[in-house]
Structure formats: C-alpha cells, structure tokens
Image (cartoon, rainbow, N blue to C red):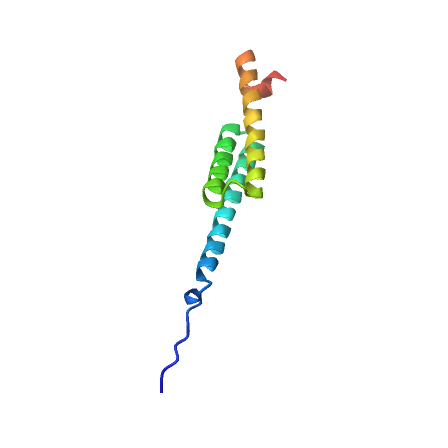
Length: 104
C-alpha cells in the first residue's frame, strides 16, 4: 500500500502566483509605511526628513510594483507637495535669513 503524502501549499501550481501576491503586499505595505513616516515628519515640520521618506516610498513602489500603480501616483503627489513646501521654505530663508516660522 502506497503512503499518501500531504502536499505543501507552496507545492501547488499556483505557488508562483501566491508568492507574487505575497511580495506585492509586502512591498505595498513597505511603501505605505515609508509614506506615513514622511507624513509624520511633515507634520513635525521636518520637511527635509519628510521628503527623504517620500522619496524612499516612491522608489520602493516604482522598483517593486511598477510605474503604472495607482498607489505610485498618490505617493508621488505627496512627495511633490512636500518638495514644493521645502522649496518655499528655502526661498524665504534665503530672502530673510531666518526660519520661515519667525518671519510671520
């Protein structure tokens, strides 16, 4: 009598699809976590640090999930927004020689 062996779920023909889906979820979560760190730094007024986390978020998304991701568009919008704020802050600092919060 032949012994029956229980097949491991990853041994199924759909295991490649399972692995791709799993990794997509991991990288999506990582991109969102980096984005959230950027949001926190933006809220704290640390725009340079916020921009770095937004850049890492966009890069993670682009590298692992592709350019056409809707998530990528949202992450890029956040990065652009902080980049514009940082640029405005630098213009004010250059014009007034101080922190923008002390000018107003």
